[in-house]
Length: 245
Image 1 (cartoon, rainbow, N blue to C red):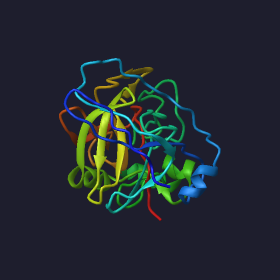
Image 2 (cartoon, rainbow, N blue to C red; image 1 turned 180 degrees about the horizontal axis):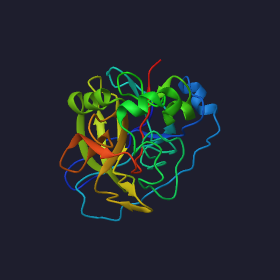
Image 3 (cartoon, rainbow, N blue to C red; image 1 turned 135 degrees about the vertical axis):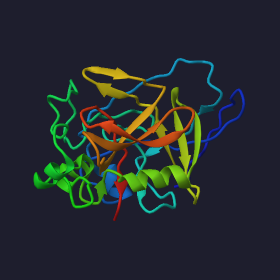
Image 4 (cartoon, helix red, strand yellow; image 1 turned 90 degrees about the vertical axis):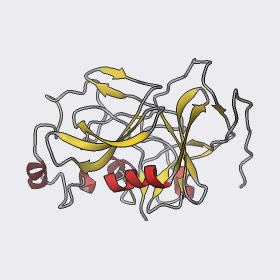
């Protein structure tokens, strides 16, 4: 079914972003996704800043697997979210459940080297989380997983990134080589029991461990640009799953 796009007048210009809903537990196709009962909690944030340059608004439609013309397909919303502008759940790296407090002391992976994590059956030979430790695979099924560092880097290098508002939430419209696109909200991150930098930065885990210290790779962005960064594994970040079937 063709989606009706609604462009809303902005200070400088307008652009449309598809409005997507619903992540489930086991997802193998767009049709399956619409039938699954959502089991992950939702978190939302509303932007009241009236000085943003662009406002983005479109009709609502079901959760989709988005083909952007890249090596993998991307989910239309964060893990635990039901709309593309919602933040969803925050996870420490290599953990399967959200929590109220994100610290080094209660992290399952922070205190271990990559070689130790391999021996513990957390990582594979390429320093990537095994499916049993990949929360996207566990929650959504074997055809889903967290993006690797290389896949996140591909999203940066091969796509057009446009900063703006989606239903009052700051973030990026990311458009792939074939015109397919997703919206990544500026979700901030959890340190301890506090959330920081919402509406200012986006912070998303990849599945790849960093080869020095207690860090792993993440896809981070601010209004200025997206980048691949390393971050302490104990912090709470969101996850945008990829579909690999």
